[in-house]
Length: 91
Ligand code: FES
Image (cartoon, rainbow, N blue to C red; front, top):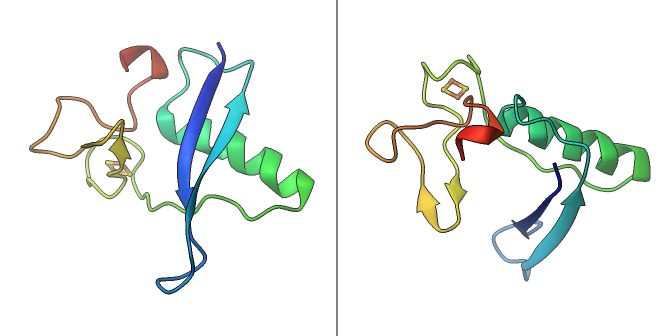
C-alpha cells in the first residue's frame, strides 16, 4: 500500500512552519499508524533529515498518549472509536 502523509513541520513556536508531503510505499495493512511513522522516521534518518517526533507509550490503545490529528480530526478516547495502534486497514 502507498500513502502520502502531509505533516506540519515547525522547528519551534516562533519558526515559520509548513506542510511537508512524504510518500511512503510498501506499507502493510496490518501495520499500525505508529509503525507507519516508524517507517517514515527510518527513511528520514537514513537521509539525514529531521525525524517526525511523536509521543507513545503502550502502543496498545490503552494509555491514550499517541493521540494525533488525522485529516483534521483529533483521535483519542472520546473521539473516533479507533486509535493509532489499530492497523492501517482500520483507517
Ligand atoms: S501509545 Fe498508548 S494508546 Fe497509543
